[in-house]
Length: 84
Image (cartoon, one colour):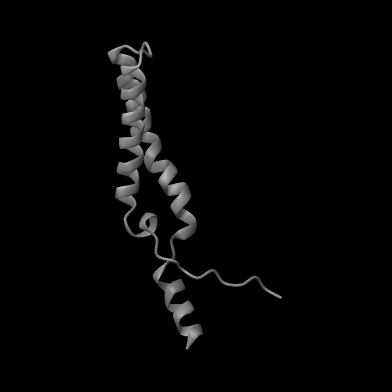
């Protein structure tokens, strides 16, 4: 007995991945700004380095999360055909 075929479910991360990347980057920037405002001793260079890391990691995190929600057109066509 085979496992059931997953059904594509539209989500904002699948349909608008750039909003998710932008959201993660903005959240990271806001957290760093908040921590600095409340006394976290980060130099301008350290802030730039951390923000650069967030900018690089955000797309990778989104890709890892969204990968399980992405379907090829052939898979969608096959799933739609099996429902008829």
